[in-house]
Length: 318
Image (cartoon, rainbow, N blue to C red; front, side, top):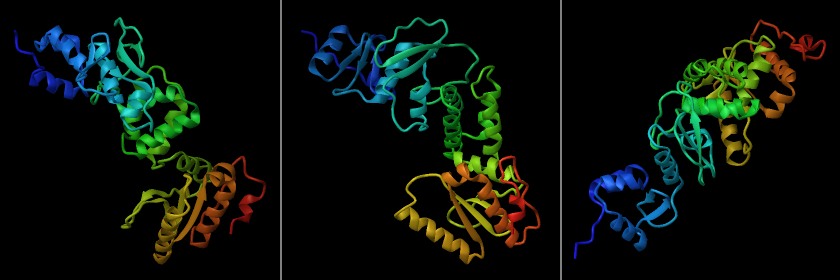
């Protein structure tokens, strides 16, 4: 009787690199017989995910293992794209139920749960990154923007840049390399604002609808000035504007804000704090308050009314 064959160290190392997944072709190349593969499945040590695809572990497959499985099924140059790539890059909080696998435009594939295969044209996106192979952060952001509303596109871009996953310059290069891009004008304008330091949808709104629309002086964004925390907008005249777009500035968050404001006051500076309802719903009133605070602290300029401003608002500035 022949001794029972076991997968060798090289095959097991390959499986580990692929989150536990191997193809039938890879097992054959490693010299593992079909009988040995059958016994591994029968014993529960390995399991068959789909035709010609195996998981070298018992129990339900992890999502990353399924992502690798899609890449292996897609063949040479296949890679993860869309929301699945967004999750792998940390751009999206939850793993999608369907895993998009991008394959070369002449590849022959067939969808099977949880994989959806889509052909991609040459030259639209840059090189693959990571393990499992996926579209770059920049291409992933632009792909997600293509299927998003304008407001969601703003959030995707600001989250990616604010989270230090990419930069405005890198996103602009990727955008310039695409012949077609949904929301192109919005993205081009947005990337200018993000390059200026706006790192959230609320900060973009403040920059556009409050500061720029009313000709207020340009603040310094994400400023530390030797402090252990960053301030959203700091003006030369000793005025700090904090923008709180998230829920949860209560409890511990409220006290953190209070301690920061106290520290700013001890440094001789004033803090004005605004939320989304203020900046999105009353940008002209916010601009009036900021201009008044700047005037009180020595700014010699004047607020310029925007088309939405009530008549006479400029005269109300202190």
